[in-house]
Length: 160
Image 1 (cartoon, rainbow, N blue to C red):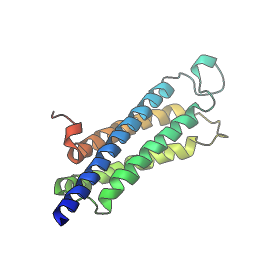
Image 2 (image 1 turned 30 degrees about the horizontal axis):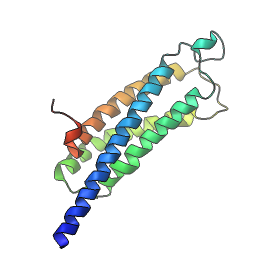
Image 3 (image 1 turned 135 degrees about the horizontal axis):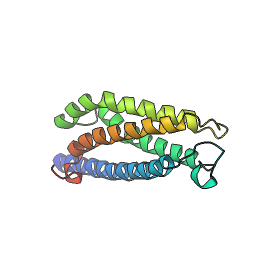
């Protein structure tokens, strides 16, 4: 009976992880769509063509999506591994290799949010450069995540 309960618990954990991975990928897609829309604006100040400048709330909306995505990955996937709740050796080994770089991307994303999530901040003088850097960070993070997620749930990622 104990083996059945243990198997059932393991199956439930894997099911939750699968759901979390799917949620993370959906949130990442939202971040990338929002990023592309924001990065496509040609003016980041209050002057110029009304159709091509940051609208009130656009940047804050992006920041919120970015924080949600970052937190989901950190608290639901990476922290679980860091705390030793992952038993698969391949996952733990790859996580040990990748986590420092993932943590560095987290720092960049949080710093961007801290700088631009303030509704009273109207200094967009560095936004273009900061968005360019965030685009690079998101690309790096996506690549690192995909490597880790392919080991966590191989069926989500076809062989390359």
